[in-house]
Amino acid sequence: MARKSSWEWSRTAQTRKSMLQAAREVFSEHGFAESNVAEVVARAGSSVGSLYHHFGGKTELFLALYEDHQAAHEQASAASVAKARKSGVDDPVELLIAGARAYLDGAWERRDLVRLFIDGDGPPGFDLLRRTRGREWVRQNAVLLGAGGDALARFTVAVLTSIIGEAAREVATSDTEEEAREVIEAAMKLIRRLDPLNVTDG
Image 1 (cartoon, rainbow, N blue to C red):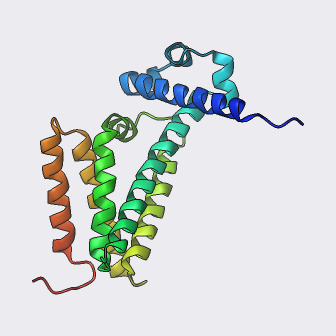
Image 2 (cartoon, one colour; image 1 turned 60 degrees about the vertical axis):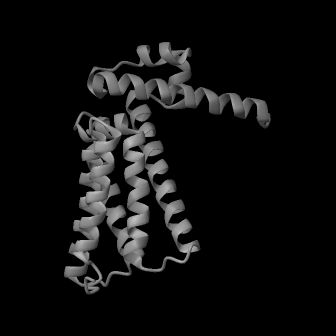
């Protein structure tokens, strides 16, 4: 089988990117149920056949958009935590806050997608996928915090993760960036106040 040239790979990547951008616009405007692939490919300047070739259908396109959105969140948070560590931060709570701040910045930048994914209008099985991703997020935060395996520690990490998730909803539905920033700062204060590692408040 012949290998694809770098030009062909680039064209394939650009086609995928164009379709995802068009899907983002269409799904955000109409929701999943009311959207159709014809409008997506028209905006992408592509064809229905090409969409099915790259994604398989409307459901797969929606899920690919979700996975890209989550990947962007994870990459930004990981980079922010790594940057904080490099600058000398070693307090696990402050590292969590660094990651959470990057996550919430992304919620504002991609607020159309956050609103799309929280409104409940997705393909069958999407809620389960979202819950599974949520459990993995709690697990990652537990590792970052070095939380113990007891029930209280697990519950505390779950509460902190929920705070970040709820803050993302509030950020995404804020009318202005200033309002979104106020929500982000309030979330950071609340995380510190909950004192998940039982550090005495100063």
